Amino acid sequence: MLLWVGLGNPEPGMARNRHNIGFMAVDTIAIRHGFAPWRPRFKGLAAEGMVGGQKVLALKPQTYMNASGESVQAASAFYKLPVEAITAFHDELDLVPGKVRVKRGGGAAGHNGLRSMDRMLGAPDYWRVRLGIGHPGAKERVLGHVLGDFGRDDRDWLIPMLDAVADAAPLLAAGKAEDFMTKVALAMRAADGGS
Image (cartoon, rainbow, N blue to C red; front, side):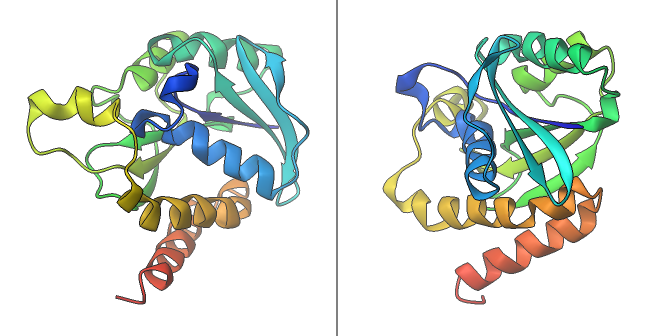
């Protein structure tokens, strides 16, 4: 089994925040691949389904971003999952909007959800799907940027990106991170009119 964690905040008023793009990604995957309904489990909302022949538990921690690791640790301990079976979907300031990168391990780069996961899992060796939201340009504007809602103009890249991630998810489930990134990048290029 794979554990795919969308990082975000549970507050209804935060649903459209840039910081919640991880929730949006796992929601889109769950819909596209016909997962069972979300239900409360592991201090979060969990839904099970199959992606590319692999059993996947999608998880949206309801502990707030800073304590995401509590939910992830509870789910991974219950299923006795190795850390490499876990993938976090999260917002990434250092990537331009619409860019998607996958990597295993690494630092938290100031992301409180990743920092909490590192602390609770005891290792940073899980996979990360980094979903670009762009940087506001100045450090003091970062908090307002990540906790701000996506604007109307953002829909032009956000919806195609979420769709591309969901469409390419079987490659991710198969451990083909490079192929997943390529497929997402090609879909984004096509959505952008091939430029």
